[in-house]
Image (tube, rainbow, N blue to C red; front, side, top):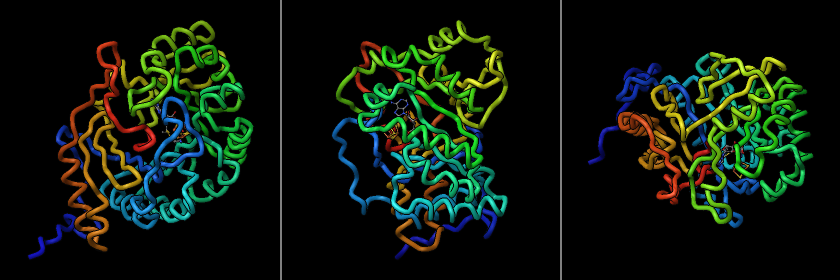
Length: 346
Ligand code: SAM
Ligand code: SF4
């Protein structure tokens, strides 16, 4: 006998998602592909084996999945990857998700991108109601950029950023702070961003995925070191600005622009965690730093009715852990989480 399909609490108004610690889940990051046109040294190995296409959720399935979260109180959706803009026909997804912006159910639809395809898509993204994009940029030096991304073309990313700004998108730049790699560029990156009205955020490198090449410990630079360095160049004024994400902001008095710091390792930002992540194969991670996960692809494919999907999401949120425990030290050389960042999209 088939198990009865659990339906949302009330048709049209399913129950909001609240985890066992009382945190409302209102922010979902969805990876639409594990593929990327770059191979950033801290993110991917040079020879990545990508998933067979049949394992990926189709664009229709991604739409159903995102819409199920929106129906249960998700206010902000971030599309990520891999590189989201290399997914074939990804604009179909943005176009269809924009109906939730139009209805008011969704407050923000956004994406994290390496910028390589932005020149092509910026205007269309803006037309779909996207207002903000995060562009990852670790260096302003074209040769260093090529070395860090292994395949990236700096000029193309610059053209992408220009196109995004020209389309009226608010752009935030994200740089991973890498010891011995871009430490001399924190100030130039801030000046570059602020001169164009962009926020600049620095991220600590996280111990995710086995990589060949530089050891994590050698790359790791605590955010305090980034802050100290910037404090020599700028007067940093504390700010209570928040985007709903984990960044903490200061304002540089000299430029009036914002600088964000994301410190997954040195500061626990778990107490206020309102987010979950879904991979491009439909695996829901309730915490970036824990292995526990729930498969949403099976319930998606089991029925065209969203009942099983809603039941699986609710069961997973009921297991969302209190927090994570990333450690990089000399005794813990292994990554805390074996998956790469490109699976869950950061
Ligand atoms: N390809 C897009 C991009 O680069 O923006 C989206 C996906 S990428 C995985 C999202 C973010 O994760 C990027 O800002 C990237 O720098 C960051 N990232 C990747 N691996 C990381 C790691 N091991 N530690 C910290 N940040 C990482
Ligand atoms: Fe690609 Fe983004 Fe990972 Fe770089 S950080 S390899 S651009 S997914």
